[in-house]
Length: 415
Image 1 (cartoon, rainbow, N blue to C red):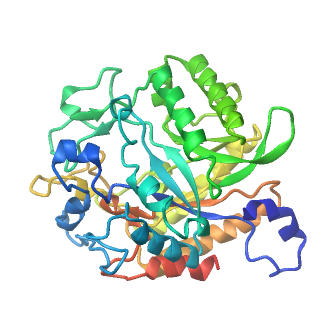
Image 2: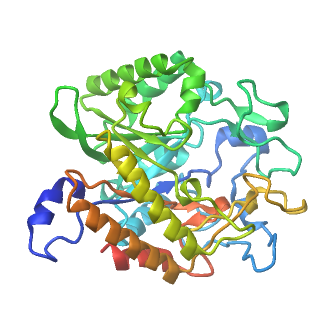
């Protein structure tokens, strides 16, 4: 990882090191027929139908975002096919992306078969002939899986107001997992993924005071685990089990807390969290006005949030991993014949960028990271939301409007 070279790059003659940090892209694997989706939606279902059937919901909005159609890309190129995934890997690596951060799901309801939406990773990425050209890591999206494909106007939101889900949530998979389910997830991860030669590792301080490269594993909205396991003490016990499972697999765990209500320094010491991050600027910026916020304003507020969050967690010696967004528009997940208002996810304020605007944002991010890395013992990666969150408008993959423009922007800034 480039982060391990930080000290050398700081001491080197200017220009000797291209950069001291890695660039990762969040990967959402709902673009292939998944058996659990097919059980709910019918044979061959993928989320592409929401994307291609999207319609403008307000004046000036550009919808639908149509993917670029070529071998390896587009509606008819399954990401679970290793040949298609190999094309994505080559494109990512050639344009400056160092690793995919796969959204990963584990539910009690799906333990009798493959993990939900795992085809992109297990059948596509890990079986691609060029998989070692790109690293990968996991972000456990431990959240309720709700049928918002599409969401109807009068359904309950994706976030629970109580421990018992509202029947109107159309809950498909329960994010509140118990200790048995959580331990099974840990053992599956450490044996199936951490043992892969291209799993992404970052410098991590161990309990004995030494620092070594450990497998980055992120958990999104950790409060769901607390609810499922019962309390913070139980969560700490689970993390101890997870670390022991990683050690038994011949490696070690770098535990990243991604967003949620527990993103607070008061929780971190007891849980021994190694780093903190967020899912993108839509999580750290107050988006306004409705229905669209100018991208330049999002970038300005997003970088300000980085500074505040870095300072907040530096005080307890835990690094903050910055994340940025290429765009955000989750309106394709709403029923386009319904009204459209500021009613909470998947409705709400959007933001969009052209490749030129995105490149300017990347230049701002690079300047920020370059300054930060001059003083950091570890220069954390930059995470981009997202490689392929098409139904949320956040993607780097080529489309019919801009082609490979956003990938080229990354290559221009992070060669």
